[in-house]
Image (tube, rainbow, N blue to C red; front, side, top):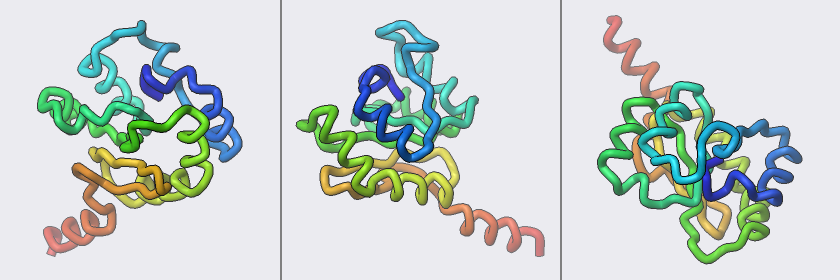
Length: 140
């Protein structure tokens, strides 16, 4: 969980309810640590990032970090929701969609979570089965 969400108890409760272990930004980094510093650690640890920061996919330097370190990021695309609404979005179906994406797509990717509880890949995210087909074709 990034700095914007790492203290959000309603989201913590929903993640725990669904059996999802999580790491908090504040357990490893000081407030204000640049994204370009902590994003590589997320990728190296093979973690899935949950964020409210919609700007990472637009910032070229940060997107380079997402690519280089194979980060899997999910961000809330709905700006005007509170912590309880975000938790309800996750609990109401978004977590299930997120799980399907992180299980079926290779990193790096950036995916949005909508108010309607839908999750959409916005950047990257090649399907694992497509990658396996390409490897098999190369082997022939």
